[in-house]
Length: 163
Image 1 (tube, helix red, strand yellow):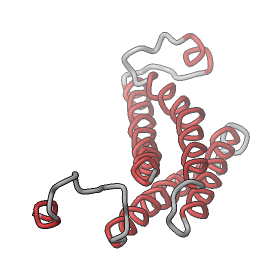
Image 2 (cartoon, helix red, strand yellow; image 1 turned 30 degrees about the vertical axis):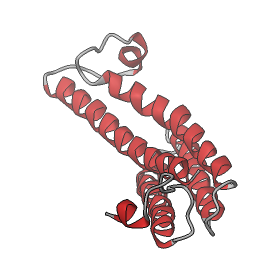
Image 3 (cartoon, helix red, strand yellow; image 1 turned 180 degrees about the horizontal axis):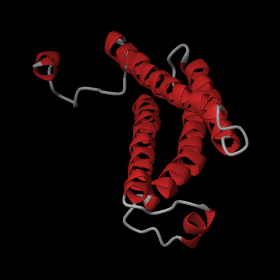
């Protein structure tokens, strides 16, 4: 379960990096379109005919942030109940709470654009807490000599396993 927890925590952090790259691609494409004399308006965005200007970046950002990351964060929270390392549930709950805040901010930006400042900063908090959660469990596994997740094969000496 520890490996699954670590994998889910790193997946949350990695998915936020994918989101950042996707939104940078989308806005870069929009800036390129505008610099060449194009106009970005609601009709263009709803027509899905702005191909080649980074439009897919908005879709990736929305799907990863609105669906994928919340599901992974929820899975992390569920798995944390089965990991026998102190604090895993607390840190998974913090990650899940920050993700819930991130989704709420993301959907609220159209009404209050200044929330984008908090949205960007909170993304960094999600990466930091998810990474810290993974490191904590990994460090606990390395420090726990009674960890039975890796057992020597039958008949092998302990010297052969440590070599």
